[in-house]
Length: 414
Image 1 (cartoon, rainbow, N blue to C red):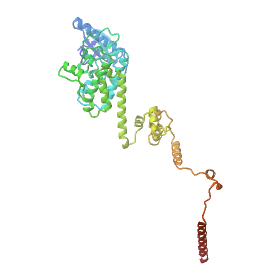
Image 2 (image 1 turned 45 degrees about the vertical axis):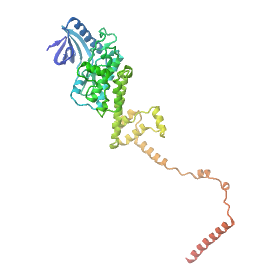
Image 3 (image 1 turned 90 degrees about the vertical axis):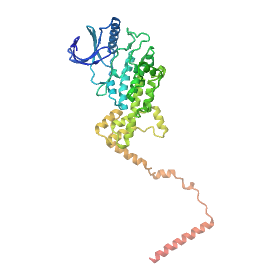
Image 4 (image 1 turned 180 degrees about the vertical axis):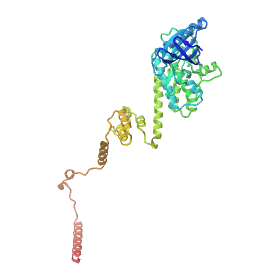
């Protein structure tokens, strides 16, 4: 093993790449540990020019990108017949190694990983760079779940001087898009297809297009439609089946047109799953403040109109109700957090109790005052007096006389 590359002191070998060796090294100028990716240029002249050009293209492509989900390039150089790139040293595992362990990750974790990759890819596309080799071995995942995309070695830049010859295929066969397979000119939608293949493999444990050789895999990519991942992994929701199907569409116009759109749908799917989980556990325990903020989304005009159609008052404020409930049941820190999240003033307990008492009183209809009662009542002269027949008048007089007699008798006997 070599001891130095330029000013960098080699610490250990990290692995073998397609073009050379990857080392762990120390930059003594700033005492920083870096990863050194090399390429051996001891090749035939035509091969040397092609590989060296593509190698520096990776440095230019990744070096102009600054994104949390893309590996950072620090330096590029050449030592003898070895060209090298010094880049950020990543603590973690390749997604390829994680998949090789054979254990399917939880769907929420898969969505988180692929969302980060799609965000990084979207940023690269916005800067005119198509990766062209999106695959698990080019995705690093840290122990905390942070994701970095690596290896822009065959990326196409708008100003690239290294061009792919017509019909020349670059990339990994299992993750190629249909347009890559047939050697057509590609754009950002090719990366989306490749990421869709990665997503499918993460959800099911197997690639969507398989075969005994490269030609068989390419045939499957062009002609086969894989079964929905939900048919293999029953934890996959229907929404995610649709996302995968759209990412793997054969036709360019049927596919996601941007990685941003893919990222938005992945994020929406993850949020829906979190809400469903929170709601399924809500009857068993009081929701925390974090759960409350997750399952009580802001309402847009459409939502408000739908609620109005259900007969609910438009003045009802679910955020205020949630905040008041938290003030009565949660800790002071949680109430402060919820107050900041909703951008509402923290309610006082005295105000909550007063409002509750007022609401209780309001439920009982107040007794009208004498004046109000009189105002609502008809005047005596406006009341129509009942007309009695002579017979009825006689019966009434007899009844009154009998009652008076009874009263007098009872008084005498005492």
